[in-house]
Image (tube, rainbow, N blue to C red):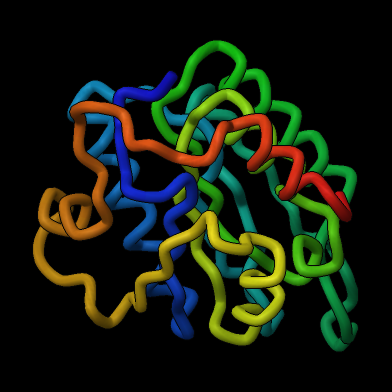
Length: 198
């Protein structure tokens, strides 16, 4: 069971600017790790690629420090998703090991197209909640409808624009405090509900 007690099992930050949210999620993770909390999941670090319009997407797994390059190396003018699904699955497995070892929070860098379609990080989210570990996730505004269909009533959504101050202040606004556990719906019922369609 987590030492963090947010008001809802899932906390979502809704954003439009990818660079800003990546930096904020890293700041939150660094602050909580500095406070002695055990984290699993991911922050994203992008690596510019000369001659290409898109950066390489690199996920850093927070429990192990492993890094996973989840971008396929495609031609300069290739269209469509650049996600390396096999590498993403390896990353999810790494985070699942961190969760099993004991985590106070699972951070998911993005609820993206893959998650909207039923894959990606969805099983990891369900497993975290089955273990009564809260989840922090970044949700692009374009995926908000799909996110709400998935998360149902188990998430509190926060617009990134209203989160202000230093890392401690942002964590306070998000409800990441220690104390008596909140009275959530039983964890297995939440996990079962969110597992539908995974």
